[in-house]
Amino acid sequence: MDSNSFLLALTPIIIVVMGVVVLKLPAMYVAVFTLIYTIELVMFGFNLDFSLVKTQVIDGIVDGSKMIFMIWAAFLILNMLLKTGAMDKIKEIITNLTSDRRKQVIIIAFCFGGFLEGVAGAGTPSAIAAPFLVALGLPALQAAIAALVFNGIAASLGAAGLTTIGGFAAFLDVVDVMDIGMFTSFIHFFGAILAPFIVLYILYGKKAFDKGIVVFSLVTGITYGGFMVLVATFVGAEFPTICAGISSLLVAVVYIKFIDKNKPVAEEFTFKLDENAPKSKINPVVALSPYLILLVLLPAVRFFAPDWFIGLGFAVWIGITIFITCCLGAIVLHDVKSIPYYMVISFKSVIGALIAMCALLALSNLMNTAGLLSIIARTLAETTGAFYPAVAVLIGSLGSFVTGTTTGSNILFAPLHYEASKLLNIKVAPVFAAQSAGGALGNMICTNNVVATCTTVGLQKSEGLVMQKVLKPICILWGVYALLALFNTYILAAHL
Image (cartoon, rainbow, N blue to C red; front, top):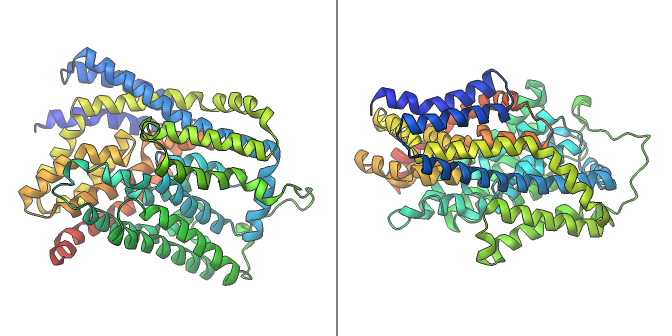
């Protein structure tokens, strides 16, 4: 592979990173500019036919619109909770559980977010958990960072197993999916332990850590990671993240209620309600009804809906399910007449994201179809030799950064990893696991996810700042995951 082709293939990614992260320009403008550049690049530099370019751009616009539909639906719930006063009651409920802001972040973004990723995927944690935190009073930047970093632990075995089962479907007749899930969960076990500490450090620095929060973070992380390993190893790839999210949520609540209930919290980490504000008279169950309905409806639809409905695409069926949840919640909250109002103001909130998302997905399609990603990945593979499993983590992240999903990254690069594993005479499953784990990390800085998350918390035009904040933890986890990928390949797999 000549170096000129490699450098040319890299240029769209470089432009996005420079524009959003370095120059801190709004993602909407950077995405449109990069798309125009990439169209010219693939037509004149890689001889892609105009009709194919047109098709890929249109597909990207359609797919981007679907993603924004899901985010728009999530805004409906948030706006309804705020206007009806239900969010005030939810704040009281959360504060009565724990006034420790650090624990609230872990419970909502990590535990609840993990459950949402396990059930639905496709950016659901960002669309639901991030604005939930903002509504509780957490600064928007902190909410976005927490949602993105924690999602990087959940995505490999998320979407009811689709990321792994669908991502490596073409090779499941020669590679056992249980092995892929086991090796992937082993990597993410350590990610789950580290993630709460990484997030709290980014948000609050060293001062965040006292004995109480260290123990709470360890208990939650070990529970989350432990259930991922157990379920992936002995049950399958469909349920690890669902079980990790639910089990860690239950353990966190029990720990707070019965072990850590009387521990004092430093003033700067204490979330306090306005004592002079009147107490909400809404019944707690009524206030929580949209989220309770969502907890039931999302898995019910995912596992029992007809194939034609799921076949509409993840963003579409999730968006429809969230919209139905909003309607049912409006009935419970006696606010059905306001739904048209919520629809309008929610749409106004996502217009910028719509443009950015459509352009980014069109860009992704062009890079994939023209072979730019394959050129980058193969160049990396050809230069790494025995360290290839570690580099597979980086390749997985690259795929997610551009395609927007771990599933897409797995589909794209599975053939490359299979070929490389055979040439290096190493087992394929741990290399696939390294790819998938790296793909999950790529979700943290994937421009699509960053745009979506910033939109849900009202941080439009601040995507570069968010990516800068998230880049340090992803570098730490890249290093850890690369070492674990080598361990899986040359030690663990060799003894199984």
